[in-house]
Length: 392
Ligand code: SDX
Image (cartoon, rainbow, N blue to C red; front, side, top):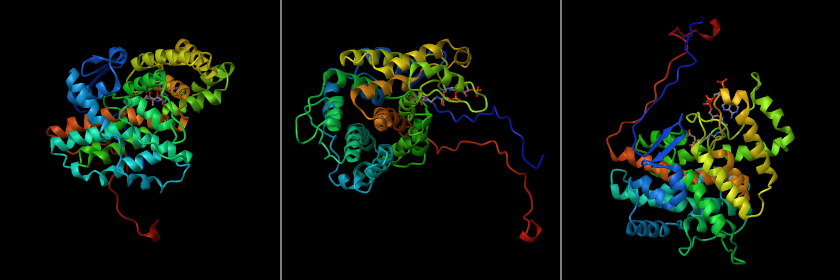
């Protein structure tokens, strides 16, 4: 009417790409990594083996696995000068803000492997990122506490090393509990990749310009931070805190149906899954295992989460909208039980998702690709002539 183009609000511009890495069937609730179902990987595999699978397309032999694990171990330290980089942040900076900054800065330290057309450079960069993310994540936590950084140790597994760097201090030995290490490894594994989600698409789009991989991963971390995406695990715990007790759940379910001011039940719904997120099922089982081992199975937060899940799965609104628990619904409860502070939850997600991001980046860069350029449906003014200020 005023010269605007009308447009169909249902129009969704989809920039699609082909990939061999991960397959999702949202209606059936299927998730395959290089053809292997996520529940089988969760039961029989481990995080570093899945990293190898995502990067190379096949499960490693025993010898390949040993070499890969050793290679990753020998990249876990970060350049000593990177420690100074942290000093520029306030102690109360959100660790995701630190991770965005520090990960992007890695390109200023590891510029000996930034030729993205060189497969060897791409390989070492992939290994460096997978190896260093837990170290940087733990450093961002230690920095917030004002505690000294703890160096990685080569005698520990990937998950044990992360927990050790998070909770050890120079004053006394920190013994990593095998249960917590297994749960931590499972959490990393369940977050490793998820096809063309918002942060992976961000990494691909940044990579399509020829930007260096550290900058692309930093862009992915920034996209993941949002509460609709990777920030949801933190948002789930904050929501359960706000709900406060099982008796208040109905009130929040009602708020979710409020057309004027809908309250999003964090940890529910998904852009693709219109069935149970298969990761949520594994996460729920892990949650029970961890809480049982820790003797906190009657954790009030878990009790509230289970009650909310039961009510929501039987509620007509949620059923009609096909809203099921997603990967973030239970992960926060496990992380809390492990002792990870809420503000670190999305940092854990980013650490776990690194192999997925870098596998997609590498898949695109290894073949012919063009710069990404999503199209738009213009809905602004038609052409019009300039008006001088005296005529406005
Ligand atoms: C992740 O893409 C990926 O793969 C992401 C991820 C990965 O591994 O990378 O799986 C990780 O991001 C999981 C999602 C984590 N986010 C949350 O848990 C936040 C809460 N969820 C929502 O914000 C929401 O469900 C989204 C953002 C995840 C999806 O939003 P959509 O695309 O709007 O969902 P939809 O179109 O299927 O919604 C259908 C309807 C809508 O109502 P109408 O517009 O049709 O009237 O359901 C409503 C939504 O308003 N709805 C919700 C809801 N999620 C959707 N209502 C209440 N609570 C919710 N959580």
